[in-house]
Length: 216
Image (cartoon, rainbow, N blue to C red; front, side, top):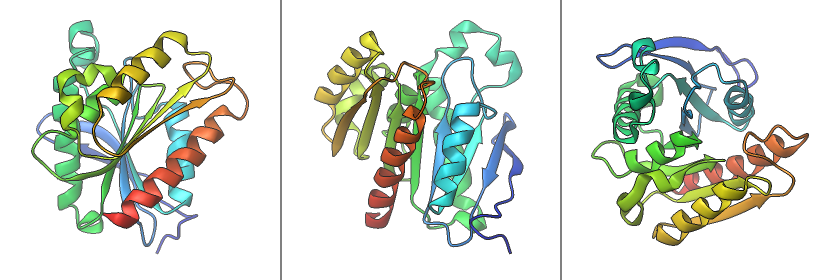
């Protein structure tokens, strides 16, 4: 049996569109984190895979998936269809909740860029209860009028060098009624490419998921 440090990445196909994903479930997993990537990204995102590997070491199962098919990714309108992305996320959460190794596990979303808006919107849809959400350099404002009805505790992480996005996160933060926190990471740009900044994201995200998964 795999231990937390010997996790096997499993290629999976999800839903009627056969969305491609990478699932990893540590022994004695404490919950599942589903990643919602930003535009132009997918399950192979180096940054999100780096975060996912670190989360698995804390006991989280992870699911990184392509929310769109290759044909859909070529359509700019589809790439920015937040409602469609949110529906795909909800479908993935429902699929995961039926999988034997993940049954009864709390589920969280980790959203980046436009994926953060999709994660927040998806948390308002009918489906598995979402225990926690983390946004990295995200656009939570894209969830629009749905923000006040989000029930999932939400952590917004933004780089101090990501000027316009800081303002959008502050507006979204004000609209959220669920338990929430906004943290601005010093010296980080939109992609958190600066040394040590992504590790700060991991530290905050790990703490957020661990705390709310334990309460779920």
